Length: 199
Image 1: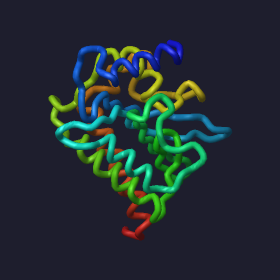
Image 2: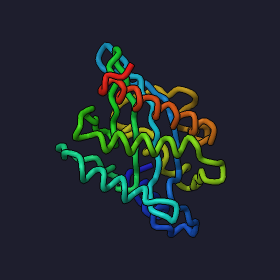
Image 3: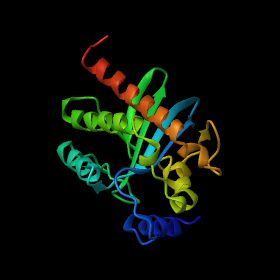
Image 4: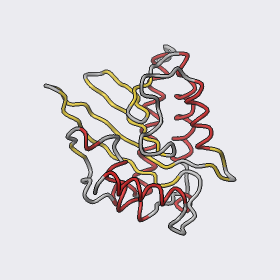
């Protein structure tokens, strides 16, 4: 699918023009993958979703407010497809762990703590969601997921675990997503424990 078509599908879904009213955190997907880099392999997990504001919370607004609080990097932390898209990637290479938000690494320091706190709360919430709260738009899954499950997956070869990106249903299974959110939460907690010297 071309990037133009993918963007058109995303805009349609996010603007509600497909006559399906999804609000809050939706289209949550989780995928484990490996990315070859020179002679090494980066092992990663990606939790992706579409954020919006609803009567249960202001997830999108809160995310944008967190971005405004932390130091700007050259490219920023908003997803290039849409400000409503969020990719949380946990990557490890030779014992070195890094958290990436929409493809940008987050430093583990005082200035970036608001982002870690936000991700910790968000992943706890997702891990505890009921099936009825985990809404997935079929158009999104069919037309956009291959381009959004892994940040810029088309930019570099990836080897996906537990399935493949031509059949994305597995990555939206509710139990699989809840376990994935728990894994991301534990990854963030591990980084925080190390930063605060907590054993």
